[in-house]
Amino acid sequence: MPVAATPEQIFTLASSSVSRAPNFAGSTLVLPSPNSIANLGQLSADLVTSTLDLPLVGWLGQGYDLLLPLVGNDPLGRGKRQDGSIDVAGETELYHSDTLRLTVLQIRSAVIKGRLALFTPALSSWIRHSQFSRVIVLGSADASRRSDGDIALGPLRSLVPRPPTEASQSRAGSSLAELAGVMGIVPLDFASYDSQNSKDVDPTRLPGSGPLLKIVEALNEAGAGTSSLDVVGVVGFAVEGDNLSDAMLLSSVALSLLASTNGVPREAAKTIKVPASWSSLYGGWDMTEKVALFG
Image (cartoon, rainbow, N blue to C red; front, side, top):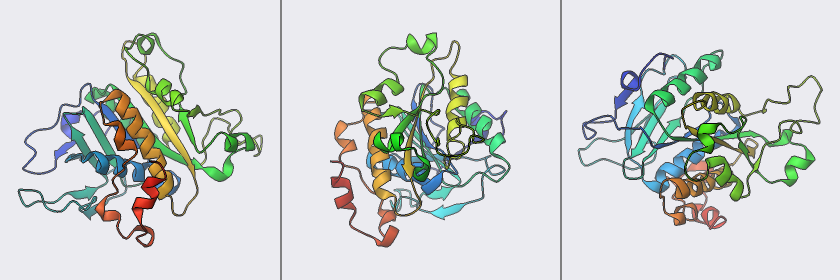
């Protein structure tokens, strides 16, 4: 995914049933932050994709020099298409709906060690060239590194590191950050986070989150000035283990935001559809009980 690449150069069609690359301009992008603890963003992206039944339209084909190689079969367990083909999992997958003006970029693979500094500007460049109007970045951070005050504020935070610009203030309707605030999601206070650790610890970092903060900052910079790119990060605190309930909560927030911005049915956040490919995940427990917790 070279920094100078255009969307046309790095996009690969999913199958013969997809005749052309979608027009992403003006649509909303949802993506996970890679290299985050518990893969909470990736799990949530799968739940959003499955719930809205978004079709796979392609992959970002030149990211292989930044992401660990990965290939798999039928990532969401959808079976064969009408033309007999099946979805193939890769390092990155793009799901898109023209009707909803919504795109999900699933990043299944980890960024190769030592290449995070290249990954963030490459991703930001592709998003900027594709002309998305809104971006929701889903991620996770180490729950064990929170202060007592942070624990009391709940399991989710929003990331909006840059003050509003004139362009964002003139945008019609509420921003994603404002909508998250209405939902009761408190912006992360970097000054208090990780306060129980050494004074040598950088208070602006987010342990366990990978490049999440850098991605949000890079996109905010891309949206500065005359552009009106609306960006928010939503981070869930987690530890390694069975994190499906955490993913349900994070994906329900994403779906609620999309209900306000993209016309997604509001019931979607309460009726999350678990991918068929998850049937044996963590022992294959009953997913319907977990969905009911947030219904």
